[in-house]
Image (cartoon, rainbow, N blue to C red; front, side, top):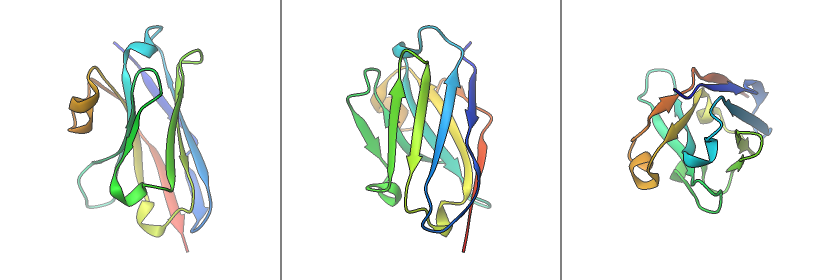
Length: 123
């Protein structure tokens, strides 16, 4: 069982930056594809992006391309989501996730979820 704990959420203004972190309990962290999903009020959960096991390959949803960056530190068992140029529509609960297969993950094939951290972007 992998436990994922997100941190770094909060209230920011449009145009600001914020970095989310997700610490994993599993010592075999590097065996997992990692990524982030988000769920805005009244909407379904959607993928933000993913990073492969080595950290050399990433993919992002169109709404965040060029603004968000996912990185991972396989020594610290942590994955990060750097969010720049935040927009009002980025307001959501952000969930860290772990999966076994990269392309399955992109389609929602997640094995473990964090509890989420709220990001609120105000004008």
